[in-house]
Image (cartoon, rainbow, N blue to C red; front, side, top):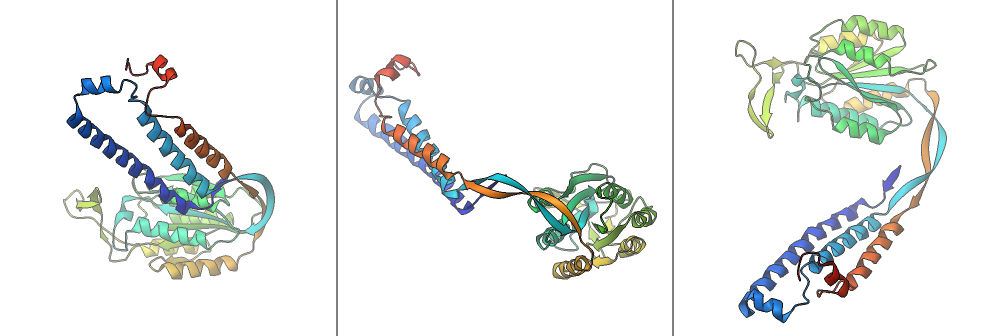
Length: 344
């Protein structure tokens, strides 16, 4: 486990392409100036010890030194002490709909991006709860097992899109079945499943599966993303709309938020339906729900001590700069013996 303390210094890496461009500019200017002075064959006779390899090596050395100095300024820290801590929380599983209907833009920027924003904000406001993520469309796929690592959760969440599952549809029932396998603690008193979807359940059986989940102690809360009046599904290439999805009759498909299906699922599993159109309202509602739940104590491992490692990068940078002093533009005896580019 490592952390980067001062990431803002990474902007200094932009100096490297600037240095390379300056080097190429100076090199081009030198060649033009030399052509005006004498022919290339005469220049070789006038400066027989000039090396064509060392200038390139010098610029590479300088660029590497800059990179190491930047990393030293960023000050990477490595975890050196792992300890077990006790936490109290609830197991939360987020089942996120990634079917093509989630590309509809009846809610900005679109349904899938809105869903990811909602889950990210919920995670940002959690305390000691554990989270897991499921992606589903025509089938359900485990994205992230139950964990206390919120950073990883948001990383996996950011990579989710409507192309990650080839089978299309909205298999809410399969997502609920998969979520059951996430709760591996039999003593957990509160198991919570959030289903974030537009509610278009093309496969059905969701209510029956939700009732079974309720019998196993799983409470299901559904978050509806979209609008009842719906919208078309855009077909894009390079973020430019090329058209809209059509049915077999050539009519534009209009996908609508099915609130009733989501309400029925939540009702069967001792949960409730949440309108996902307003992010602040969703966060407030979820926080209130979690605060009213009993918390389960569990153990989690985390790094308690981190040590600076900037010294390694600083030492490497100083070594490269020291070596640069000895990289003269003329050939040295060892370079002549190597004859790297058949310059003799």
